[in-house]
Length: 283
Image 1 (cartoon, rainbow, N blue to C red):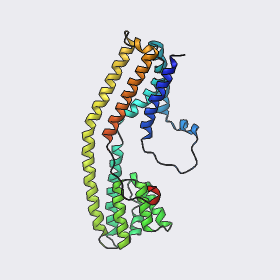
Image 2: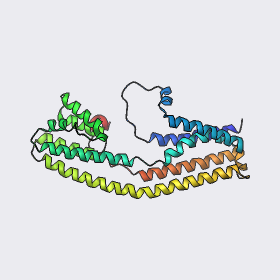
Image 3: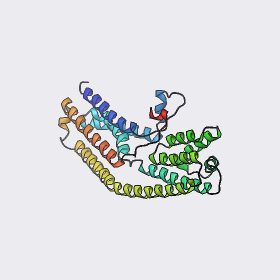
Image 4: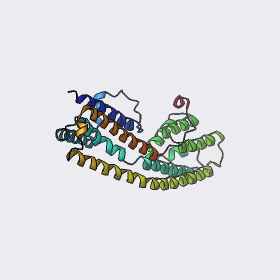
């Protein structure tokens, strides 16, 4: 029973680090009814549940073979956390959204050349809107049809996109809505070219980041395999069967997970800061 204390403490620490990684991911905010705690388990995918069960079974087997209680909790945490840490960041999704903004801006510029108003042009682009930003454009059109002022609707549209490039597009549209000039189409066409160049640069950066990510995956897989082989053979893990040894093992595992988190954050890059925010979003 005493040996289980460091195991449980270690599990909480490692799970906390992995929870921090999961919490850093962006998720859509649901403004509906509050979510109950039991619904989180139901939202787990079938693959995640199978990985948790497999990790628990593997942890129990590892405890029986090595005599280390920490393996009971480390197994499920590793089964779910390591694939999440080694998975490539969502840079591809960001690039797809940028491409969608560029395509939508170019389409809006083409609609404006036929002489329709800005509001009618925005509504007309809904039919051919790219999928990655379709919900945001659909909400923008709904606000315009609900008699929102054009500037307020565009500011809310920028908040929905939550991207520096989206702020730039919305800012140009707001200026066009204020001045009602004939040059907005050419401005949007030039902006689309700028976004296209940004997409090409980001694709090149993603290609450069793919090499160190692949190296980190191989190093992790090799080191984990070596640890498993050493744990199942010889007396290498004998010191870790004691309570003090489990505390040391906990610290080493936590440092290793923290290193993976640090590498993932470095490879993910930082998004550019936004400059167009509503009062509610800024507060």
